[in-house]
Length: 496
Image (cartoon, rainbow, N blue to C red; front, top):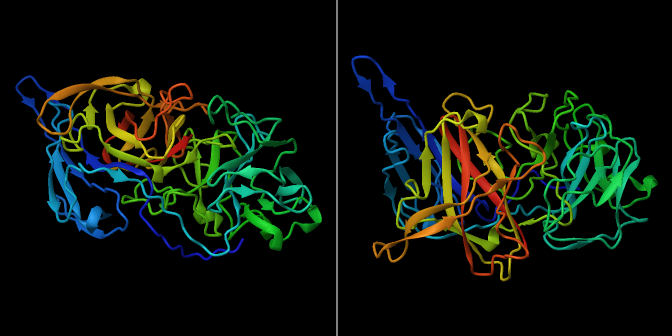
């Protein structure tokens, strides 16, 4: 597969930008003579959805210049600053500056525009996520394929179909001719001897079982490739659709670029997955995501991100996250078909009930410094019923975060009843039920969610679909293990 390194971005990142801000929470200290109350500062960078991005330099109160990307309809720039008060637990008084149609309260609805790199010579399928070892040992493997063609793809390869092979030239699985993989859909190959993620949720009543299986393990750090033929004699560059391998792989047919950093072979719940934000898995890089679909620049080291459920340092970068294998039945990224609004459009996005800060320490639930609760209203604009709805974390600040950067842990939440004031503002309040989201397991995530974790809206089912034009009030609950600047971005995945 030949693709130029430069990508033409034709729109803004397709994702829900919930916020990007700095929280400095100072606990109250008591002495025998007096009580000292400190009012911490909050610096908020609001990034609404637009068609283009404008680089802006924001100078906070501390006189530090922070380069960020702030975007809004009509290319207007917005800035919010405020403070959080321990006594009121979540009040953020916000102000805004800027021009154009945007405002600091982000009251207008935002369509999620999908950013798809348009690159010449794109193959129909790419390897989007994989691992060659897991908690069950060397056979706890999977290889996930992604339809990158821009349309539904019907497999029509040489021999019996498309082959996924390891660098020893032996096919591990075959995608049979006639198989239809939806646009942005997946196909999953698993090692049936040791694969441990077969119970990870997929579609309606289905789980992430293999669409095809194999029994011969792939050696640690070995390369993998997909070819448009199942005939081994024709496994060559002309027939290769995609490849991924480590720096220790000597056969260049089975990797792109120099390869991803070779791993120390720990039997942990890890995976490599393609970057879907454009920041290469950076915990500290703020600003909007520049992509929302799997990155493919023909450079494995730049395209793939290493995650595991303990934030292990295994040689390829360290960040808390989770494998999320997807098969033919799994929900598909549908950012462009949903609209997001504030839960209460009559209130600033930084204030309750849209954003709630709870200072109750809960170490057992990865919330040593309390929680951040983000609440939104999501509207289905797919043109039909949605029967499965979940959210994939594509960017956040998490472990191991340096000082000054927040360490957030996505958590399961339950429904809460919230009082809101909706249009026309000031005409009266009402109570609404805000549905919780569930951190999907396996894999077990004892440290909370992270990069590539998924969170399900469990009230949307075959029996209780979300109708076209209907809305859902929902919440994302984030445990705080360290205070500081934070970001949290998700993609929506759905099924009709």
